[in-house]
Amino acid sequence: MTERAVRLIVLGKQGSGKGTQCVRVAAHYGIPHISTGDMLRAAVNSGSGLGARVRATMEAGELVSDDIILEVIRARLSEPDAAGHGFVFDGFPRTVGQADRLDEVLAPAAIDAVASLEIPTEVVVARIAQRRTCASCGRVYSLTAPPRVQWVCDFCGGEVVQRADDTEEAVARRLALYDTQTAPLTARYRDLGALVPVDATGTVDEVAARLIAAVDARLAADEVGA
Ligand code: ADP
Ligand code: ZN
Image (cartoon, rainbow, N blue to C red; front, side):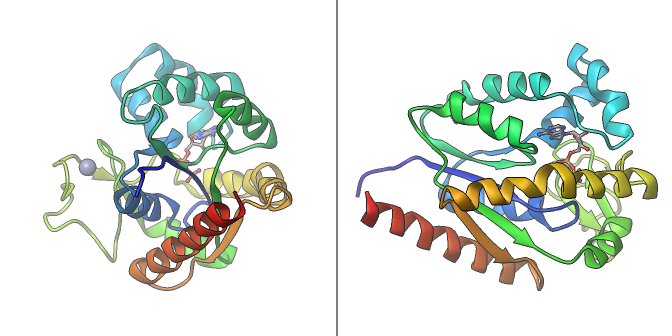
């Protein structure tokens, strides 16, 4: 069997389990997990010029400009692990404008599948209040599923904290932006035949199994249709 690059996007509102599922998907397909939120938070924590430009925007729960995001994405895609090997995008694209620009960056290649994690807003609001995140690697924990040693990341030893933008106001703002800016992306990718809806309720393992089965079915349909 020939190695093929798998280019995936996972969409899902804040608290849908998107970050956790992207880690699973990345390991399953052997592709890098590219999270714009994690990359921007790392920039803020490192005190880089980029970090200084995006900090206030992120803390308010607003969207960083498409120009900055595309710059970050282009730089990341040119690294050897991503170039030609595929990826799973987490938190990108977030607007139809970003999706249009992504198509230009990838051409002549294209996205293989866009998984959309479906979950009611009431469920995610409760989850986010409990959410704690590794400040170094971005792994997600919660008050009910903490790291083994309190509050030290199981994977990297980093400090596990509540995100600066997980306040009630910033979460409400991000959920509102998700509806107005990001939800139209599902329609865009549905029209292109790339959308794979996935029920995101249940345990992490259940959702991961559903997600991978749905993406595999989509990739297989693509091979047959090609
Ligand atoms: P969440 O999905 O919980 O909002 P993320 O970690 O994906 O968290 O993003 C955190 C913040 O980073 C966003 O609120 C926004 O300020 C910024 N950000 C991340 N990705 C993008 C993007 N693609 N476009 C614009 N802003 C982004
Ligand atoms: Zn960590």
